[in-house]
Amino acid sequence: MENSAQLDSKSTDLKELTEFINSTKNVREWKKGQAVKLIIQGFSYREVSQRLHISYSSIARAKKEYMAQGVSGLKLKYKGSQSYLTEVQKAELKIWLIEQPEKRNTSDLQRHIMEIYNLVFKSTQSYYDLLKMVN
Figure 1 (cartoon, rainbow, N blue to C red):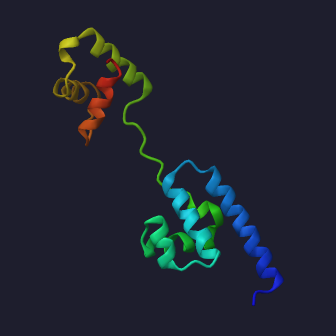
Figure 2 (figure 1 turned 60 degrees about the vertical axis):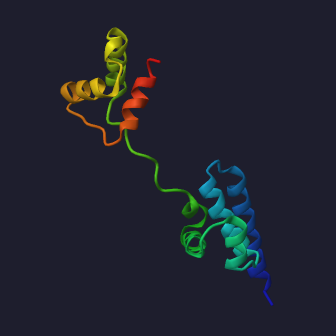
Figure 3 (figure 1 turned 120 degrees about the horizontal axis):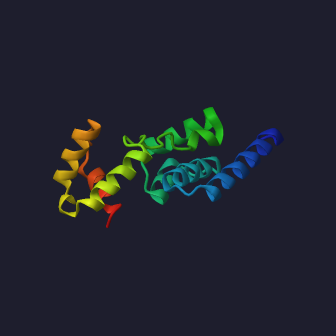
């Protein structure tokens, strides 16, 4: 049987987790928070895994992160990478693309960026995203 201090702590944890779950807009953060909340409420790893469609290891990792860091441990660490082009460079590219409509393709854009900015993107999607600026 749980003592009063454990119940108070559990209640505080559930309140904090519920606030986090309700406020996050990221599905992965929501699932991590929900998994920890269900584990605290006494659900088994199997039940949580089936409900949320996540692996046991994901549940264990979320619980471990929560126990060590609280709600901040459930937040995603990855924030994306910095853009390789500055806003000024993007504006220059937009002007270049508008002034030369015949150059509105990925190969010409790639060549221009390499010659002017000494930069090559790993993904062709980056070039498509730049072309979208003028379309």
